[in-house]
Image (cartoon, rainbow, N blue to C red; front, top):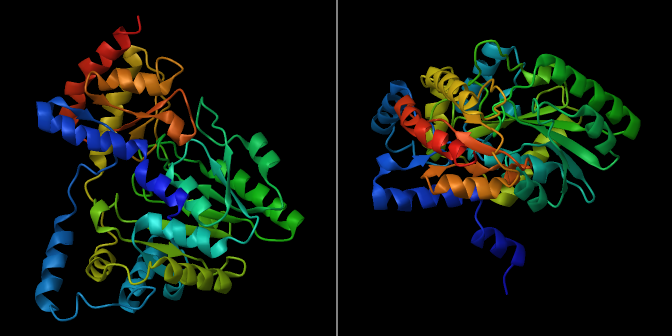
Length: 393
């Protein structure tokens, strides 16, 4: 006998991964240059030279130490460097002893959900949302409450949100810049959210935590701003990954930050650490604890994503697609040209355009386009998008 739930998760991979795997098979059949894979968020720009140089230097200088275990919550010197960086850039008041280094943002979220959840707890998520949130939340024994999208802007539907908060609400998850829409929540949006959470926390007699999932924090376009969320709402827990800012998705390195202002903060941090122990997320990869903490003030050359967004949005709108303007990250979330986004994605697939159906993100009638590719790939793909649009005329 095995867990039926886990067997289901293991045999039914996410549609993103299924498309990604299909794309690799198809590329072997017809050539990678003939497959336009917009399925997965693999950064298309390399890590800064300093990342590789630092890794090589550490491997040469510390061959007997660099592969060793660190403290469960991460090496003290790495946490100190991360804290110094957050304090320089955001005036975060970061105490390194409130940082827990993790195996990427996924592990950060899992540790937070498992650390916070008590029987009967619920976490509110705003659609469109990263599908694994549901897996992580339910895996922690909590219930995910989904707020439908406001499809003209993909900002928060506050009326539905307020009606959905209850005494069972333990936390609210935000992801800005957003995967899959690329939308950035404005300071005014976050302030309104904070005011509601403050009011509801007082009404129910317990803190409602705001879990800010921030792997795209540095990918913000001109005219947009991604505020430091703990300055707006004190009960914010930050989950971060270097996968996108430093183009290191395969290295799986990130952190959880529990600010000093968080209610019951010492207990929250202890619970996060306990969840890390329970889940086996202790001692994040030692080499990249050091590399990312030394290079944490850097980013890859991220400007290509904004250029890609301009190219894509303009072209798709001319073809008749409805696209909400992204403010960051590297995703577009246009409406499908028929209500059935799964059928639309399948029709695109016949043109070797790999687009992820929006139903899995809680927003049927849309598809996600991951444009972390070279601009030339987009230019060569545009006739395919035109052919797809023409097929509906």
